[in-house]
Image 1 (cartoon, rainbow, N blue to C red):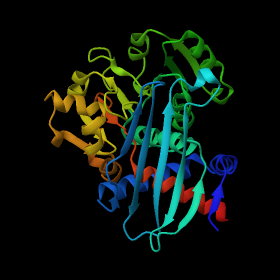
Image 2: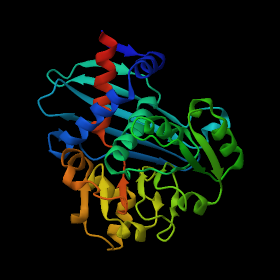
Image 3: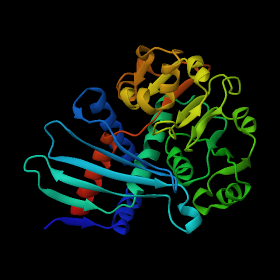
Image 4: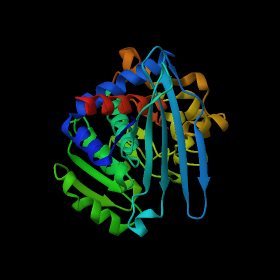
Length: 319
């Protein structure tokens, strides 16, 4: 029989095991991906207008592994007004040897949220300045909160400024008990964030650049993860040209529909200037070498993350 793993069981597994374990498996996945040991076809994508939403279908496998994975994840952005989570979906685990369905993980988008947050921690581990004075979080949704929770594993900084458009959502964010370890200030003025924070994470579905080229401090690292579909943009294209190091989780994906893609289409940077995240993890010479460098990582989400976290949860469920 096919094993079905419930959301409750998935959460128990994730919460019982350490962030460091998740960081390790996601790191390993990015390195394998950069080494071209992973087969990842182009992302399947559905866009909806009424109500606004999107669905990503990501799938792939590690060569000579036991499994392959298909992930379906949706985001419908009016859902919170209906009392529903904006994210939903499932992970499907198959045998790479026989094609049999081994497990259905009814995660409702939870594992996508977790593996995305873990990727943010991975990026900060290798690219953030050695002395993080203040963390800037752009956005007030679930991913914004998860980013902070996983950043605890890779930085000692607990000072945070959060930007959002809604004062009500900002106030709720500030009061969230899961973030009690942080000292959180809130603002609707982006320059208050960019003028004080040297580690910034953007988590919105914006279709207009939110951070401008002249606003950031020397030595700032930015992890941009909201532009995961065509038309979405959080970072000024000129800012990408200003960066000393530009990193992508998937160079092809980021050129196609990430923040980097805008700079490429405007001929502001050349694709050869982009470094794969897996190569940064594997080669310390590709990381920042001082705290004055500006670094940007564009994360569009890669199927290897889904493969790794699905296999991890399935293996823990068998114990």
